[in-house]
Amino acid sequence: MNTMRTAMLLAVMTALFMGVGYLLGGTGGMGIAFLIAAGTNFFSYWNADKMVLAMNHAIEVDERSAPEYYRIVRDLAARAGLPMPKVYLIEADQPNAFATGRNPENAAVAASTGLLQRLSHEEVAAVMAHELAHVQHRDTLTMTIAATLAAGRDINERDTAQAPRVALINESMAHYFFKNENPIGRRFSFTSGEGYPIEIVGVVKDIKDANMKQEETRYVYLPLHQAENPGQVAFYLRTEADPGQIMNAVRREVRRLDANLPIFDVKTVPMQIDDLLFRERLVAALSAAFGLLATLLAAVGLYGVTAYSVARRTREIGIRVALGAEKDRLLWLVLKEVVLMTVAGLAIGIPGAYALGLYVESQLYGLTASDPMIMAGAALLLSLITLLAGWIPAERATRVDPMVALRYE
Image 1 (cartoon, rainbow, N blue to C red):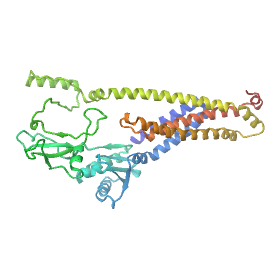
Image 2: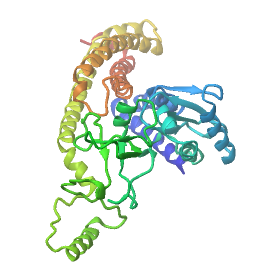
Image 3: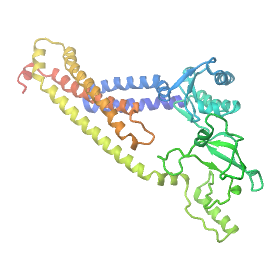
Image 4: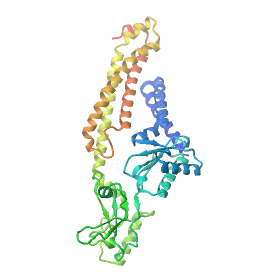
């Protein structure tokens, strides 16, 4: 099923390329678009896994360099009847793991050092078993998971006011105070003179609770019954039913327990995320619109200038045809100059785009100024337009009667 979905996606992209090619250059343009689409699909199919691993700076390891990690993957693959995948390690504190590859015979699994350091042998095996399941089901385009609870246990119903005081800390606090040591079982206090009554029982991943650009902040999570002054309390409910119906039931239950207790600011998590990201999404939408407009104007201008430049050589092409020049050689004569111009433009434009990207990188979230897919896509689009702009008028000129071409002004 997943193989069929991938094939359908590639087929749709190829059809889209061919349609654009036909609109721009007729049958010949459709043929060139097909070749470009086929080349792009072929490259993506064979190299997508390498691009993902390279973007994560993953390093391939073996049984000598990472014996326990490697043996876990080897044993799980053998039990699942899968070929042994390549095993990669990512030098990163953030717990993370993913599987990639076009099929089980060419699969790869990767895990971060943060995940291997924080999880036990059994927990790492569970994570890698999850990733190998993606390999087995052939849905390893780029599947990534991260452990919410990085180490230890969660707060539970046994952590009452009479129970020993416990707390969870996030990864930033664990790294700040304990570096690479295991914080589980260590004790701390908020004030001096009372010893160290609070035991750390778990480490959770960092979150952004204010906005998506928030810097990593050190957090401590306490059981509600052990907090001295909890202040405002928020409840999160998880349900598979309609949230609106659940909220009505919750309101009735709260009213039954305490008719004077107010309930306010009721939102689903998607609604909270939408409110939080409204400004960023508005800016992103406007930026995307202006970016598309700029790309369209650049494409139209590039096509017009190139096509006019080639069309001005119709008389020259007619003379060459009259002297017996072959059509293919004439086309290559024109396209060679177009290709050189394209290469020169890319050599100037890509470094310039990278430099400007660095200038505005502080305004981006989740993106870098050197995003290879964005740059490659823009370069491919403009290169395709330039080649079509040179090929269409050149091909048309080679079909003109030499006597007509000689009188062309």
